[in-house]
Length: 283
Ligand SMILES: [Fe+2]
Image 1 (cartoon, rainbow, N blue to C red):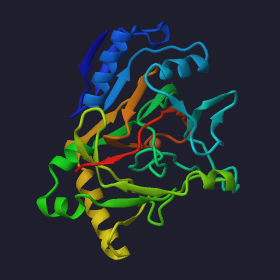
Image 2: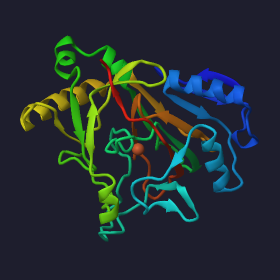
Image 3: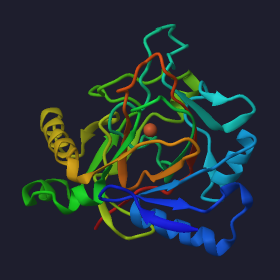
């Protein structure tokens, strides 16, 4: 196995490792170390004869969990979601493509224990474009102006399923799905449970309020944080290759899909979420 830096401020790629060939415990420990220290890890040239083999490989890296909505589950594989650029909200009948993942977010942060990681496997890719982009939340926190830092220390934000301020729509939930995902308070500065590093933690798709602030003041604070985190120097943009398995740390990065390719082309990936802890505030 070789681990090398990707072309960005963070992120590594792994070559000469076949996830389908049951890597040993020492190799998996080295992979996890590289993952938590670098936020994003790309396993090149992976091949799975069956989607179940991808789920088994993801199971070596964490504990797969089901997503909030069942609509995109791959039939016969409850922990695998299909990600496609042609997805629409079948429940409302609206035929406008949803552009799933098309703005900065961290996955399922409206759950008390959001997934620690997301793993994607590229199956069909457009001829160019369709990158997945990441921004580093520890880096954003480290460079935060003092005045902003003082406003968020020890504070929490409320993460709803869909914020009244979200820049795009999400799939409509069923009543049963609503019950398990109505939202919760999360710290704005989160201590990483494995590295101990502090980072910002928020989600423009979901954050609806800041503890102790009225709506206007909370919105202004969140906007200032969003603006600060969205900088080229904190960003890695992943240009997909066939066979890539890409895993990122939802505790340390925001991510977004890009839709800069011909919509007549297909972008199709499989997604697995890995179970995570309840976020802990930095003291
Ligand atoms: Fe996502």
